Image (cartoon, rainbow over all chains, first blue to last red; front, top):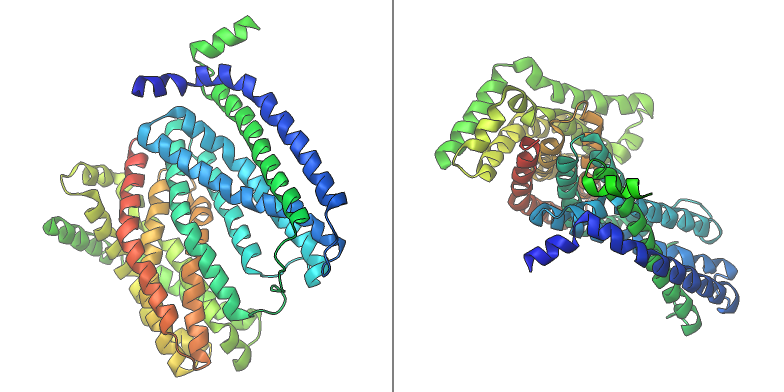
Length: 245
Length: 223
């Protein structure tokens, strides 16, 4: 079992296998994404309260989901790298961080664009926006630590530990921010009656979520391949690869 | 094990007391930063009272942050950190001793001087009491969580900004509940919930942070 894992998680094997997977993820992400956007932008009914501008949720909500999901992936693979010393897991964690930060940023920007017509201001210290902002800071901290330490092994271990500490903290941060907000201003602007979602709105939303996940899978594979090539640049398998080209 | 704990604690305290001027620096910084706000914003008592909890808590947080360096830097440079890790005692316990020493030297003085700052910012008396309680519960968490950050960055050149970048987001819950407790107390409302939350976070940090710090120190040492 252990040998098996070792073999399949070697960067060389991963590099060879992942090439075949990327097009599948990329193409299905594109197809599902286009179809989901079509349903979301043209087919889904107009919201009776928010009009047309609610349609940004088809990007905003999946992006926000991804921001948390990728942090979890990052922390779990960093944990695997830390405990079982699997280099590929460290590479996945390092490759995920910029993607997660981008999704967090996307969620923030779309949230701000939505906030302008809805709340009348681009930025409101709403509990969810605030915890998303803090999540962005956590990503930045991870990436800063990763790049500050020169030795790759200890950079992975140190930033991996930070990611795990962050995961323990995320629920605490999330709930304290939520509590802080409700104490401060209560249900004025941020809460309005949320009618349970119409099925024609729910389907595009879920499709977009699936498309975002597939997109992440494709991008993380590409980035991990780069990471593998770069880190193993002095190993034989990369040299052989270059010579064959 | 308890022997090692108390020896290390006494050693750290003695080292710090031999270097007294450095000891006062975070404290002076704390008072200085708080007194910038009346100058920068407005000295009217009502406005000061409104912003006092946040200002005092943020300043305390920054003062602790700046003093975190002291926790492991010197030991890392002169090699005694490696000796600590070679000792047969659990590293967690040793970390706990060092963090306790750090808190006694920076956190506790902040708590003691806080009432003065409460007067500066024209906080009512009940709020000053709550300020003391909240700092008493909150500053140990700042030291405990900060220890994780320092042990990760102690070997990094110019790690100061990096340290604040990775630690400040983790401090946010403490800031929220600490400042909020004082704020609510100034309005004469009960603050039990906030203080209980701070206590709960302290218990959590006390049990998990030394573990993470020990792992982080070993990562740093393996470099």
